[in-house]
Image (cartoon, rainbow, N blue to C red):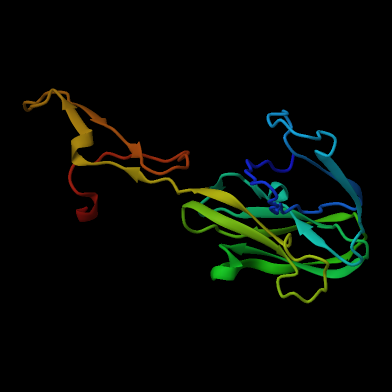
Length: 231
């Protein structure tokens, strides 16, 4: 069912119902319209309540570059601040004509709203109708944290004539984890006994926290008597 509406008609009245339908593939289709499906209205003639119209959708002739957010991947995912990130995607040709020298670019943010390109534009040498090809860039030493929108755009400069430009762009959400943040404070240092006397053996306990989002491995914790910066 494409649409349904509740209609009231006065005697002799005629109204027009409008439905928008997108032809997403070629072929022969039938539109069937039925009124008073449940026979709620007593009528003089129930035999004219259904009508149909057959029509044909012709395949568009030309190139149609397509990218999909499901094919936009990150390694690692989530991303890690300070580390390299690999971004990959697939670009396909949904048209009926082969495409050559297809440019594909990745962006940090929407390129239509000031997004910044990531790495160099990738060139796909050839795309036959129905074929797809992988593209990828490496984002070195990822900076910043939190969620960001990563876009992939086929033919970002609109240099290739296509049957449709509506599917040339896609995005996915990349989460970036912050670097480790090791922290101690005076409140994290404890002694036992709490108030030692001269000659007592004192056990010192230090609580070290990692306030970042990435693990911290193989680091040294040192304890000094007095300020080490003062010698």
